[in-house]
Length: 201
Image 1: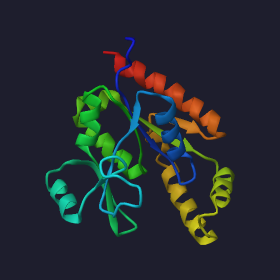
Image 2: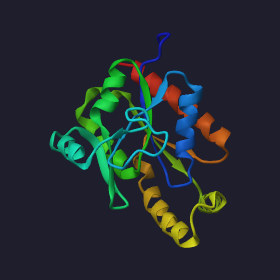
Image 3: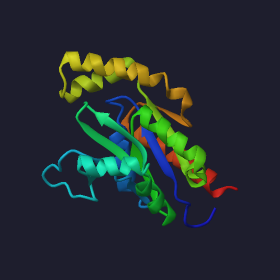
Image 4: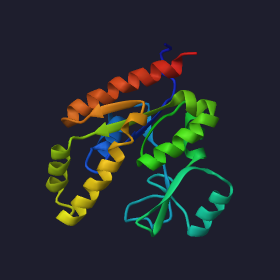
């Protein structure tokens, strides 16, 4: 392999409480060649958020225009009110400049990425999908420890997690979640395999 590793796209998914956002943040912090994909939303910026840095903030009309252009790799309604999506340009343009990327999306979003990769040689060669598997008791404990949701919401999230887990066999790699450090070590091992694949043929 060359001194400069080829750019790769790591797509992480897993249930709420699996630690996927923490893994993405740590990868960007500790591996200099990585950035998070800047996704698009129709919600209003929160205090301190900068357009083009934290998100691309679109009006509903701007989002519709991009939809009409078929410009998104994936998009979805969130809580039936706001839309989030990933523009193809937000992935392909940085990668064409040699930038490695990581993104956390739900399993439906990953399926959209797979469809895009099937017709895009760059994505097909450079994209690696990773699912974070968490056993039921550990996941319940994490949700309760976060103290962000009541038991009704936790039960709903657990039902969603069980549906998501059924999609795990479709992913390139699984991380059996344990501690944060063990999960990150597993992610780094997958990264080396992804880079080796991208550097091949």
